[in-house]
Image 1 (cartoon, rainbow, N blue to C red):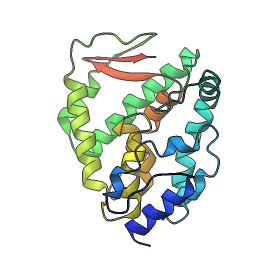
Image 2: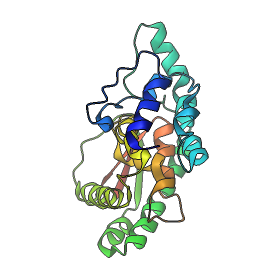
Image 3: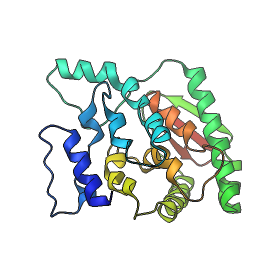
Length: 222
């Protein structure tokens, strides 16, 4: 199966899915995983032609469970969510645990890259703040540096010739978040840590929170 055949296969999984074989297939699957809301029924079929199909499915399917109740409520209100947005947990202890794991995992990533500057910046993070709302960032240097490091690593290690590259926009559009997209595709990356270093980030998101660094502090917010 080549990429065009896989794109055709994906289009046929969804009734009335509009697919133009003359256009770039990678640009036609934005919000594709939303088509399987709310329960994720049959989403495993997406991965059947792929290597690592079980691992890829097992990474993705929790997003449906995490958003099911909120999605069903939106359906009742006549709304159809454009993105996956889990409701926020009230378990602050668990969120703080995920936050600490996130910082530790990013340090492992920095060591994997032999990036001493990133590691030093992460070693300076000494505080975690959990709040209901996003606050203004005073020191964005670590966020910018980290974003460049992760996206450069991601671009270098995704093989654009593989079938799964067709789903790049589908993964990104889950929540318009490259870190999440890389987490879901992690089994297919060429050079990666043995540690699943983006899983704590995913757990924070799955719990209904976001995170950003502000100098020596990690802000966790709804």
